[in-house]
Image: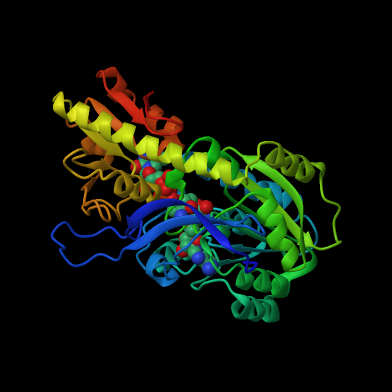
Length: 400
Ligand code: DWN
Ligand code: SAH
């Protein structure tokens, strides 16, 4: 982003495309890349060292659906209502979303009669949104497409993105696009996994092909500055294991809130960007690999039945890094129809519908969607009643 020197601190090994599920009988070669992570010595931005071409990840059949979690649906409804009450409360407001997926946020704007537009390159998820009356352009957000929209629709009061800005290696393209499309007093609001939480909880599986950057308040402030924007607000958001919502405005247009200074001071105090902190994180990741492997092997030797729950993108990192395949985890239950019947990338573990969880219940379930623990544990009361135990690896390997 700033051309500074990037120092590697973590090597998560050779990894496949995290959401490239395949037919069980497919024996063709799988794409692999080295998932190595480093930090810029100048602007402190944490980033991957190899770039996976975006069109290999965000394809027509990209399977992730934002609406697959009811907690996330409620979260996004709250975000939309908040924006409608505040930054979109003026006359004839216009909301643009980058990475609008199945339209979970924009549906709320559409219901409120608010002008909106989503950028969503993954065709099938974009179609789900369009079928519900959401306006969506099936393409990557960038400077040219942003200009086209500004010419036709005018400038946006809010440009919003959840779990998407961190997915775009070319941040210059994003900021130039925002510059072209945002109204002079508009805000660019985005939320992404927070380096502070990922490091504290040793949630190294939050790093996979799609998650190219791992943001902190400091690195976002530096990136914004380079492109004429200012970080004017931050808020920690308790979803997906810990995120931060960043609000950016054009430089000098808004007074930064005290929350910005406090989060920056907190990052400084805990030495979040110090090389020793990141080295410690890498060491703990390797400890989790050892303990999880040992735990699963011991369970197998004892004759216990263990299955996985939640065929998440992040589980690709965990399973491939820890070398966990169908011999340790014979299948993974997941509610996404587009993943069922296929096998996981790299590790080739079958994905089955959640109904199979109870036929019969296993002794242990590795909760790969640990970020949805509350929702999933509540949805599967019969598992615990049958004596089953949930196994998690964040923040450490333990039974729930
Ligand atoms: O950033 C990203 C986040 C928002 O979503 C993307 N890059 C990709 C994706 O990451 P993920 O796959 O790690 O996200 P989730 O939300 O942890 O995935 C949950 C998975 O678990 C989905 O495949 C659905 C499944 N699930 C389930 O089977 N039963 C989820 C819930 C809540 C359930 O009750
Ligand atoms: N915002 C949703 C989806 C996150 S997954 C949520 O938080 O649940 C990331 C989404 O961003 C995918 O749907 C992907 O297709 C989309 N995406 C990736 N790169 C993009 C880009 N350059 N412009 C617009 N959308 C992009």
